[in-house]
Image (cartoon, rainbow, N blue to C red; front, side):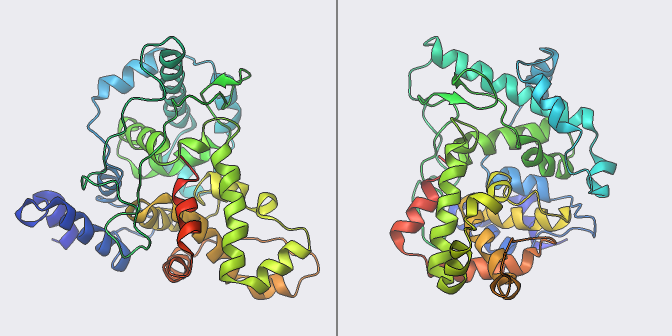
Length: 340
């Protein structure tokens, strides 16, 4: 039985949750979560649920949303699901289009209902209180060596207007690209309800800015990628900007989907293990790390266009941990806050 198996079965020694979480993050970073060549793991989804501080969800809660039928975003969802990770045989073999459609439709209903509640005054704006992280803190730390990199989150039910997937600028709902963001959850989970719980928690508390408004969090993230690259690799940054190659041109899918758009899927799962352990905001550094990994070809090209395939998660993580120490505090705080 591995150290992770024991931890998941018995919990942290002496019930010390903060110390236990610190140890869990350290193990994820240094040793990884045991999995086979297809990225399948008996522990991964449970560790994700724990790191995301996902509360228990009754299966009937998910089934009730499914029974509501087609959401207002159903047509847009169906227009996306059939083309989700179409070139990845592992995903296509394990996750059906119908399964992905049900989870996304349930999420769309939940976001729709939350927005209706806000609009009709059923809960006080801007939001209901946001739960603290599992370790009981809201502190924002600077590097992956810390216990937590999470600060107070925003909410998809905030007071801002939103056109997230709908025609009404005041609505909150399905955003194109959520299909790819949901895909790894379904691949790793043992059930649709489990995937729904983790995905809902993730978009609600980790990156609400990606599915609210005009994807304002994504656009903030793209601007930060340019700034981070200028700090980490000024020469490469100057070259790309001199060719008109801003992050908004090449990195939009990578920001929105936490690099889930870049195959192979088992490498995405490894990267997400790290991001859920230390904070999804580090995905911005992961994108910069991928640029640096191909810097030689970019610097010698008169028309550089970054191509991140295939994803090399371990190298990206190593570069990201190193880069995190170089980012000025004010820029790092912007990274933490950009997706709220």
